[in-house]
Image (cartoon, rainbow, N blue to C red; front, side):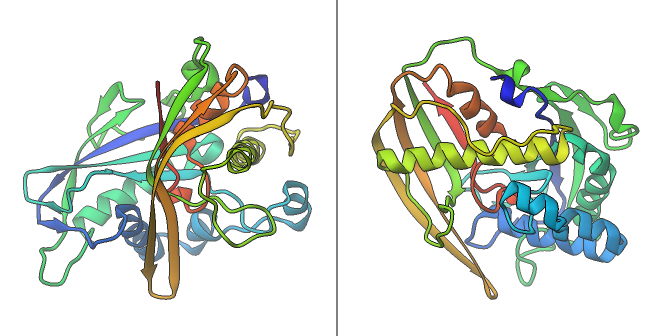
Length: 300
């Protein structure tokens, strides 16, 4: 799929050794990570960096071209460990994936320091009465292959290898795939406020449209693509079956988050769709993706 030839990202896995007990609240771990990381950025870095990472808005000309309002998709994804385990004792390990898209790699040093300070000076998870929630960075693993100590990591972001579609594309011809959504996924149609659950053909079209649009926006904003293609030409003669979903709702103060987890199967001629699905497998889909929402896995 040459449409996304310039889209690229960097993946790092932080292996964290717990030093003081971490206990997560009964919410998606990504929300705990979101609040904790934002606290570190707010207290440790200047306002410009905080704005670039969390609060940057688009100029009217660009937001109009992308048809997304003033808030752009962010250039990073923090993926917490997605397991039922909610309590981590000293000596145990906890993992966080950091994905930086395109020129977002320029912020690697800030994320490195934020995660370090989160474990050393601040805390992760519930604090009062549960342990301090501290940890240390045991190692950082790039692209699931290269391991670095904390001191040697991010000496120069230019040394790291980006991942392009050609690196992860599949040469197989699929007629059937099963998508497993294992973090809450919130997909909202344009001009609507009600999230969709993917269990009908129209919902599948919506899923493909929104995923395509997200990837196009990321490539345009962060990967040097000059042309933004709003509509795709992928065939929609696909069928959906075997959908199984659970719905999740979370509240933090006045903020509300929701999304589905579960599985659905796509059948039909997937030749022109599989690359799109593979990219989405790495870069997520839907709302609140910077904190691990919208993650799925392709299963044969």
